Image 1 (cartoon, helix red, strand yellow):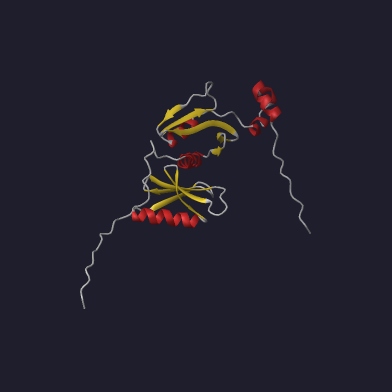
Image 2: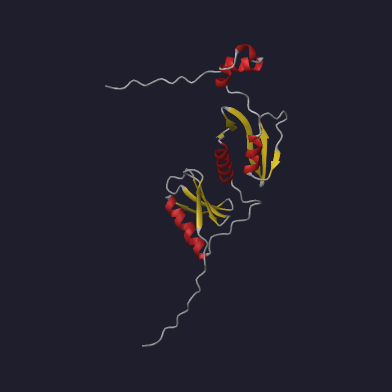
Length: 200
């Protein structure tokens, strides 16, 4: 029996891919901290799922799973186009995730228009080109104050002096209320909780 020559290819260690779901239709694929590809969705009737690298379409499929397999297979083989390095690889999703985590630690509420505590807006936080900033709601000129991290930015907002809540103002003697507090109470509409009738 003739001997067959075999070549053993050394196993290349491939970094585990991490997937971040931004929305049902948008996913980002990372190898370590490096963004390698994204999956998005468009209005094509037969193949609406699209793999994008460097803002260019590299693959299209009928399902999200087929795009996922394409990215994993091409990445493992080393044939996936190389994603150009962004100035700083911080996506909007990662920024919002960092802000939300810090707000939770401080007991703040993160809404679309800013960060709140006890229904009072403290300010806004963001990250532009890798540089964190904060804008206090009480700032006259709404200037961005530079910060080192999401934690520092939320900490700056924690120093904002809060006005008493409307519920606290209702407990304050009327002759001690300032004109601004009277105005806030005039606009205050308490949440009325009603019990729903129980079906028999």
